[in-house]
Length: 272
Ligand code: GLP
Image (cartoon, rainbow, N blue to C red):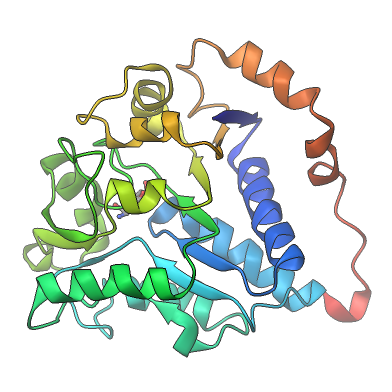
């Protein structure tokens, strides 16, 4: 795992967007794993701007989202399909047929979970998986006690998650108590993971995930044994990390990151 600390949320988001953009430029047929949540909105805004201003091309890219609420149809304003359409899919040149989320309204949810795993396999696996972290320590909707070998399945949401996400629902009683999520093992099989955490609310859980013991109680801690995982945090989310000076030094001295830290090229007036 490599931990990268940026001075503020804007810089953290910029780095994450640039890593995704570089992966897409290197491999236009990238299989990209996507995440939802408030943190990711700025990443999608930045990717949309890179598409608009610099022609970042998503036309051959395939996407798989981590999770979806059970019972919410695509057109429901709180469904993750709706979130993705709004924040990314409608703003870039992704072919909607290449965008995948589990269907939380499927009549047979267990079959839907198996189908989702099969679809990821047919696409050749996920090259780069974007991740957030919930206050419960979840990745996707893998709540505390999720097994490290868990796969895509239906889960009950933890109280911390219900409390964290209910603010997005106009009518709080409409918030589903269950979701379909990729499993921890499904995430661990992604070739590369990229976790973004910003804001002081994430400081405690991030420290437990990165520097605490590997534990089913903190599903994000499984990433400690992923062979290619990058965690990008802003200074406030990183504030409880004991090793932050070491992470900082490793990052600043690693030449491979220099190209991501160059100031953005000037944009022609007609493309602003
Ligand atoms: C939801 C998603 C998670 C995400 C989390 C973070 O719960 N299922 O995948 O990590 O939101 O949310 P936020 O960015 O709003 O803190």
